[in-house]
Image 1 (cartoon, one colour):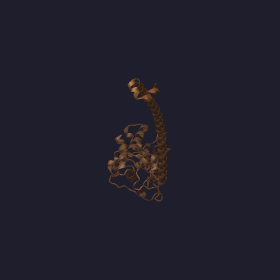
Image 2 (spheres, rainbow, N blue to C red; image 1 turned 135 degrees about the horizontal axis):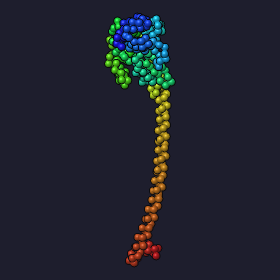
Image 3 (tube, rainbow, N blue to C red; image 1 turned 120 degrees about the vertical axis):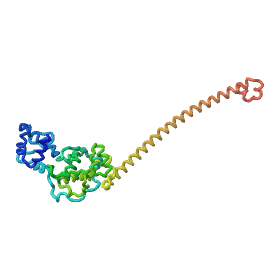
Length: 312
């Protein structure tokens, strides 16, 4: 496989038929050889290259008859006109912010041709991101043995520097959770470019991501004011309504507590009255007992004629 990969790289300007002809000395039949060449071309270019039109789970890049591999790769990337992309990108724009505040899901891919593909679903936005930054960094420093055009490799590297800035703590935390370690590579000898003109291949896709970042936030974040203050009125209305609802709830709880306390006080009062009546009756009986005991003694009865005569 290594020898075939070397041949594919060295003969990148040859058509597929000429390349197959040069590889027949490996002793493989034609169909088997074409399959091996497609795998070797995929590994060399970090893209999914296929020589047949058979249905595939993921759409590949077709290497058709009459074209060289270098031509096929160049045709897979389209440059936008300079008029379509211009201006300055906000330095706060990062993919980690999109993931946190706008419910964007990052899917890491091994295919450079699918880098920054965007799929907007009903509930989330899926962004494909090429994950082999070290491969881009290595090939950006050499132009001789690389089939992928040098400007495409450099721009792909610049997009990773733009979306995942090295000196951003939120980005570092996000990549750590994603189990991506290319953050430690830094900017790979380049700088974070914020001008649109630096992205002729991926500029339109970056623009779509920026449009998402300028839209409505998702989840609880949509009720908090953003750094630009665009949703300040909506945020204030929400929190005023929330405060009013909270105060109404507190008032309801306090009212319910007052009712429960009043009922408890009433029950205590009723029980206190019953106890008072029983205590009064007990006092009356004690009085009658004491009077009867006093009047039973003739000597004491003479001292209490009014009470003892009534008792008699």
